[in-house]
Length: 175
Figure 1 (cartoon, helix red, strand yellow):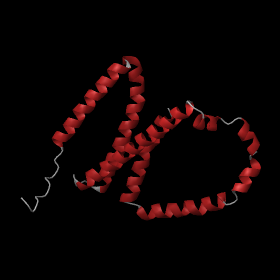
Figure 2 (cartoon, one colour):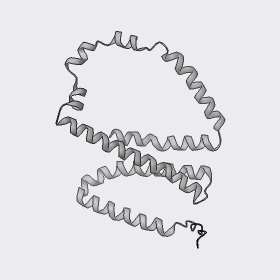
Figure 3 (cartoon, helix red, strand yellow):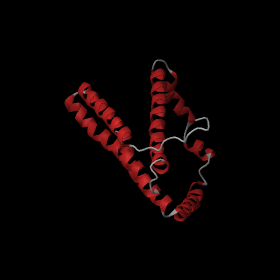
Figure 4 (cartoon, helix red, strand yellow):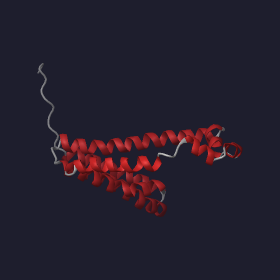
């Protein structure tokens, strides 16, 4: 559920960034300077000494569920395996989202703003898919949902390869 809520805001992030990069790069720099100018004084007094004085370290050592989950077997194996899987999954997801824009700019020769909007469509598709398919899978069953998803994904991949007009690679000197 948290992952779905994260992705609800994700498409808006890319719309805002695409707009800033395409039209308002100077204002983006200005906003970053304003953020720095307001955040630095607000958190200047928050030092490690203040944190340690406010939080008792001995109470944290007696009942620490985090260290139990990260260091005690067999829960530690599951925790680290899930963490590794999620890091790889999110990394691939973000890499594909960035590649879509690069593909639209370099291969399809799209405009900056339109190419940025393809990334917004990518994240919207992931978000809607996670929200809607969560309810659909519960109704039709996991086996049928996976079969239909794989079939539609394969069909979409074949369709995308058939309609994509990529330029031919340059001829080699040896040809």
